[in-house]
Amino acid sequence: GNSVTQMEGPVTLSEEAFLTINCTYTATGYPSLFWYVQYPGEGLQLLLKATKADDKGSNKGFEATYRKETTSFHLEKGSVQVSDSAVYFCALSDSNTGNQFYFGTGTSLTVIP
Amino acid sequence: DTGVSQDPRHKITKRGQNVTFRCDPISEHNRLYWYRQTLGQGPEFLTYFQNEAQLEKSRLLSDRFSAERPKGSFSTLEIQRTEQGDSAMYLCASSYGPDTQYFGPGTRLTVL
Image (tube, rainbow over all chains, first blue to last red; front, side, top):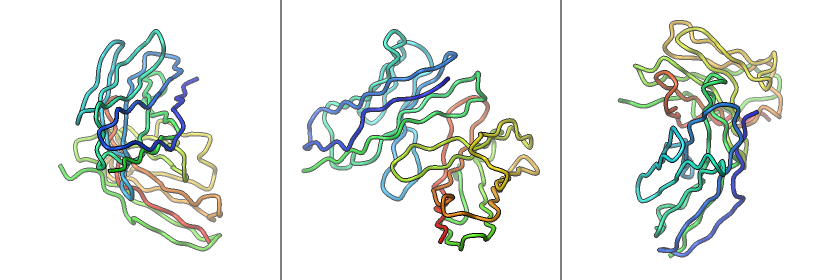
């Protein structure tokens, strides 16, 4: 079946530190992969996506590369800011299963000045 | 583009009562999804519609849950005879075909 395994948190970093949040997946078909971000009290916002192997999604300084050989989609940012503090969710969408999303459990990030 | 909206944002009810939530998707989107999110977890799929047809339901969706999308626009999710275990954030998302899903702010349900 389909599933997403995400690095457990919480993660606390100092401002301007390098961020990596690991995400690996299991899928029956050829999924699309996503990172969503949830700020306190808000809904999920799409951060970036990749639809096929070797694609790199990027947005707001965040990047993730779709690695089929390692079934991974790790999120990275070179220099985090306090405003990046949020919960990050990795997700996959599989056209074989009606495109419902399968989410990881989320990783809470706190950036301290 | 006004985004996905949900109403109400918060609902507190007593065990055994019925509740209904509404979701208004992005206007040109033909697919609409419901998810449930509990504290510290990622959203879990409940059901989805393509236009007015309900195409898939999760095993999480017990007999007490029913969802409709009568004219292929807004959708309602009703929970009958609520239980304390139903307390969660209920999220709605929409998409145009098999593409990126855009999420609403959610309805937080508390069952006392």
